[in-house]
Image 1 (cartoon, helix red, strand yellow):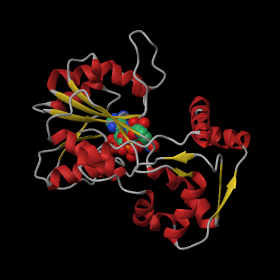
Image 2 (cartoon, rainbow, N blue to C red):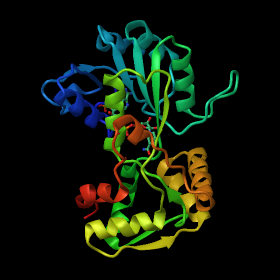
Image 3 (tube, rainbow, N blue to C red):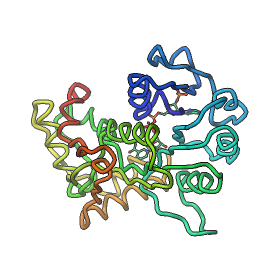
Image 4 (tube, rainbow, N blue to C red):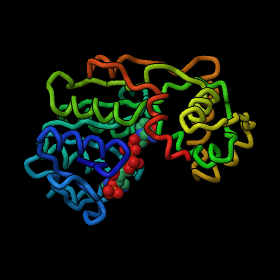
Length: 272
Ligand SMILES: NC(=O)c1ccc[n+]([C@@H]2O[C@H](COP(=O)([O-])OP(=O)(O)OC[C@H]3O[C@@H](n4cnc5c(N)ncnc54)[C@H](OP(=O)(O)O)[C@@H]3O)[C@@H](O)[C@H]2O)c1
């Protein structure tokens, strides 16, 4: 599997390992990976497809995440030569018609996978609750300044994505599924900050940051103006129309998705 040291992948690795499944993790730095003992760790890099062959030997299923580097079709080709199935961590993207240009690396990779001959499942995750850790410094100072306080988001707990991935990797019936994975409810930015404050045990105030100020700050911090524009547009749209909520987690796992409140309680120390 790829991304084994990442936010989602770490949970997938531990769950598969605890369930006694054989796992091989592809990482760039085996010495620093700190994965469970039973997990085979192999060095490889998605930006260098030649390094993937060894990791793919005798592999049935691949969990693929893409780290935002330039898309290289040879990665999907090499996976298709070795494995039967790929479970791809995507985002809430639209399906592309034939010939329609991709506007994100997730769309490009989904298209490559669909044409590859592999069996596939796409995990189209809504934004992770872990993104709110970006507010941690502001939470410590008692006020979060961010745009669109009334934007309602259905953030997803990282463990729910991992649990769905594990279920898909280890049980039949998911081929060709495009699972849109969301939290169980849609909560405004301002409300999220209030809930974080309650978990941490302090009052945290919300202050709406003017959109143009946010655009400048986020472009400086993230370095990708097009990405910032797309995020701001999406957040703005969630003021009028709350982000959608799906029952994917419940359908796949037989239990409801974890709440944002439970996520904040687990992560309270990260905001202290
Ligand atoms: N954050 C969100 O709200 C959100 C929402 C939907 C989808 N997503 C998608 O989720 C994915 C990120 O997943 P994540 O959060 O679990 O990961 P993450 O915590 O961002 O960790 C990055 C992972 O990528 C691996 N990696 C980085 N460069 C690599 C390379 N050149 N070759 C091989 N591995 C490389 C790292 O492995 P090593 O360092 O061990 O090599 C690490 O395991 C992205 O595709 C993102 O678009 C994110």
